[in-house]
Amino acid sequence: ETGVTQTPRHLVMGMTNKKSLKCEQHLGHNAMYWYKQSAKKPLELMFVYSLEERVENNSVPSRFSPECPNSSHLFLHLHTLQPEDSALYLCASSQDSRSGEKLFFGSGTQLSVL
Amino acid sequence: TQLLEQSPQFLSIQEGENLTVYCNSSSVFSSLQWYRQEPGEGPVLLVTVVTGGEVKKLKRLTFQFGDARKDSSLHITAAQPGDTGLYLCAGAGNTGKLIFGQGTTLQVKP
Image 1 (tube, rainbow over the protein chains, first blue to last red):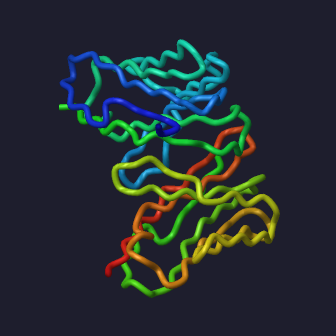
Image 2 (image 1 turned 60 degrees about the vertical axis):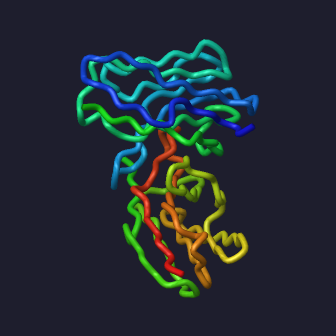
């Protein structure tokens, strides 16, 4: 069983759809993250949760809505997305949310918005 | 704003060749990490360097943190096709966030 599992691996959605990305970590970590990865750009941190509380929200548009029901699960709810939101969305976890912590990433969800 | 610039952005070499990837900034980082991301997968941590001037080796990979902790390099000796992937550096910034470079795509041809 891998440490951080993301589903689905691929998602194609129209701009009016509502979908959710799921992330589950089996490492007993206290912090979970959502990152956006676009071609030729640095990873963009979207949200950070520490012990189920959101501690970081990097000016992400409201069409992205995170949810962390417990320390093992993280969701990213998507609605009325734009084509420029097409990217690889990576979930990660770490022991805690201190700077420089080792991140464990999932395999990502490749999102295409039509 | 702290930034990390990686160079080159893309590198295509033959098996057996040596290469170096650079990660540079004008800012000081308390530590720096290197990740490798294979196609269809998430990044995997290779190493963390903490002390200025530190050198760490991982088989054929040698990582160095600059004396001033503003830059780092990754040197691969006798590259193998299995080394193919996206190499990312990430620095622990003064805002508490991990700052990522834009990555270096390495292709090693058999």
